[in-house]
Amino acid sequence: MTRASRPDTHHKEGNDTIMPETMRAAVLHAPGDIRVEHLPVPEPGPREALVRVAACGVCGSDISRMLRPEVAYNLPLICGHEFSGHVVALGSELAAARPGRGGDLVGRPPRFPSPRGGASAHGADSLGAD
Image 1 (tube, one colour):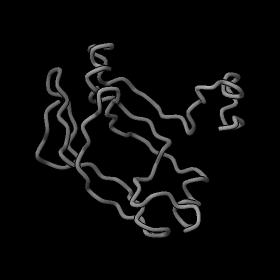
Image 2: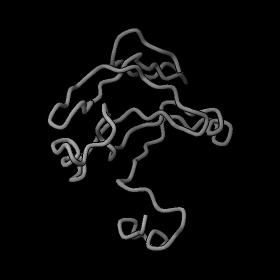
Image 3: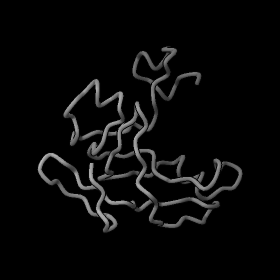
């Protein structure tokens, strides 16, 4: 992955992906205070993938966190946990396990299944105890 000097630039150059140095993000600073900001593009950790987001949804839990002080998380918070996009970089462990897999289209489900099974084992993630 190569860095581009212009924000929000993204294109392929041969087998290399040109990534911007910054990304746009909706950042929640306080309930009702959401700002679109340019932030540094993170480097993926060893077991992480960097995804260039193509589409992002807002769900009911986002709305309550964004507007009601009693349910807000630790702030500031980058909004948007339901998204899809293209893999542009892999952390070292993922790259070793899946070489050449950049560019894959991926999606992040609204909830992750519980590693303990239960309702998650039957596809009912939202009904699990955790």
